Image (cartoon, rainbow, N blue to C red; front, side, top):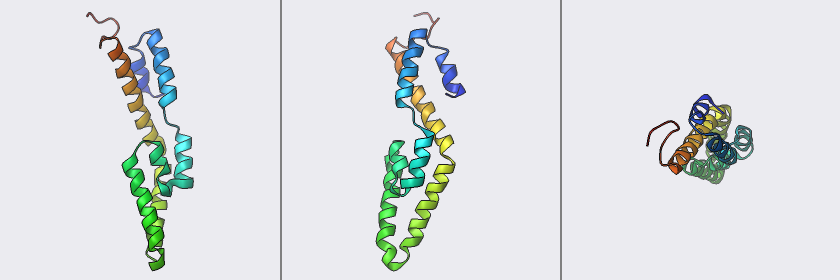
Length: 126
């Protein structure tokens, strides 16, 4: 868990921290799984589907299909190579991508917990 999320957790009560940790563990994304997906089936956009970035995933998938169809004209190999090179680049930078996504997940969970108690942080007057 990164420093930004730890700072948010300091604003929660003990019970809320348990709720936060439980929800966060259920929702956070795995860097290892995302990298494996990018390297093995990244051309189909699997790693982006896993991360919830459907638009980007569909782009990879459609380019892969287009490249496959265009292989009869030999230009398809260039498209396929570009997609798979993009997947390698995605795999290299996946750590930062996952950190940002997990930070947003933690922020949403924190906001939901604070919302449950009426938006008041501990120690604030109503």
